Amino acid sequence: MITRRKLLKKLSALPLLGGVLGTPWVFGKSSLPIQTVPGRNVIQEMGLRTFINAAGNYTSMTASLMPQEVMAAINEAAKHYVLLEDLQDAVGAKIAEHCHAEAAMVTAGCWSAIVLGTAGVLTGNDSKKASLLPFLEESGMKSEIILQKSHANGYHHALTNTGAKLILVETREELEAAINDKTAMMWYLNRETPVGQINHEEWIRIAKKHGIPTMNDIAADVPPVENLWKYNDMGFDLVAISGGKALCGPQSAGILMGKKDLIAAARLNSPPRGGNIGRGNKVNKEEIVGMLVALETFIKRDHQAYWREWERKVAVIAKEIEGIPGFMSETFIPEIANENPTLKVTWDKSKISLTGKELGERLRKGSPSIETISWEGEDYIRVAVFTLNPGEENVVASRLKEELSAVSP
Ligand SMILES: *Cc1c(COP(=O)(O)O)cnc(C)c1O
Image (cartoon, rainbow, N blue to C red; front, top):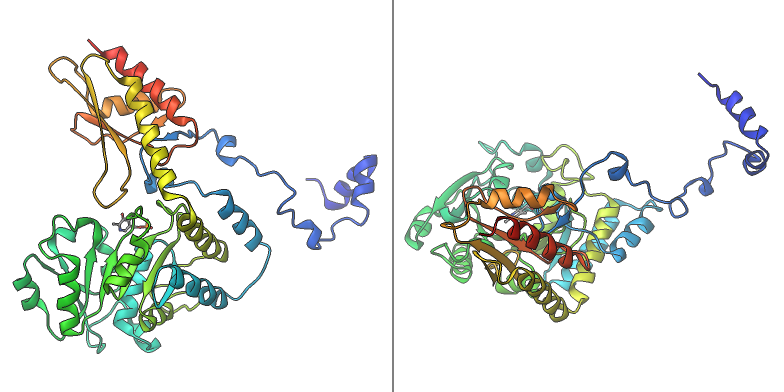
């Protein structure tokens, strides 16, 4: 093993380095090479597959790419110490202002916003209660959360992290009957609005009548940008959104916004405090700053220009594959979540033996690799364009044409 002394000797034997090192091993400010050192491409070093994302903001695919404004602010924030509480206060106030809420906080994703918001509803401003979660029995806390059965499709599991019991209802009558003195909150999943029997306004109206707080999960529901404030204006007490989906912030960040006392209570259940269920929901200063800048960058951008650009990209791809025998494509806009122009490619199954999965796999294995969405057992693929970098629509178009032509009758 080479000792430090020997290494120093060796280094100073080299004329240039010897001079540069001068007084070696002094770690002052100048030894923090935050801006001067080129970033290592660790993903490339490790030989990992990267791909053109024509699928969407999926967590498994690392969701979204952060704009330069966000990365620059993150790098700048990384150079300073600041009190976590001061930063949450200041950033939260700014976010609240942008989104018409009384208060806001940056959380470790939308899931974390649901956990912390629910914890706050249960504990209020009582740190003794915060230390008791998730054990609600004989704690003096309310213990039930009501939601619609059609809204219980996975993410509602975040509510149970607090120890709360979930009460599923379908009709307005069932909802009224389910409300009792143990009811802590009524939770709503925005994206399932079309399938639930009770809509936003009615949900809020019934909750208010009984003095029960409400929360709306709008994780992936921008654009339209107005959704950032629509549900606060509508009267939800808490609104939760992902930071790393369409907002293009850090993937492990999100926002909880709403009533001042409820945000304060949610923070009582979060870092820097320990001794509560929220300690693992940590967001660092870089993510807090990145979240704010991502939100502001998103709000400020020319939304109509983005929309027109997405339509243009979809048209580029649709045009390229037009007329390939046996194949059809149509543009559609998903309702509520990930609302943006998307291309659906289908084919005549009587002439072409191909599954969506197979086509997806061919595009994935091609060069460059392209991720699209193809569900198990479905005979179509979905091509999203809002996650494409400039020019990638042309690559997707020509690769798709190649694959479709290869199996076309
Ligand atoms: C993605 C998503 C979440 C979780 O959000 P994260 O930011 O990944 O924690 C919660 N609810 C819905 C509806 C989602 O789509």
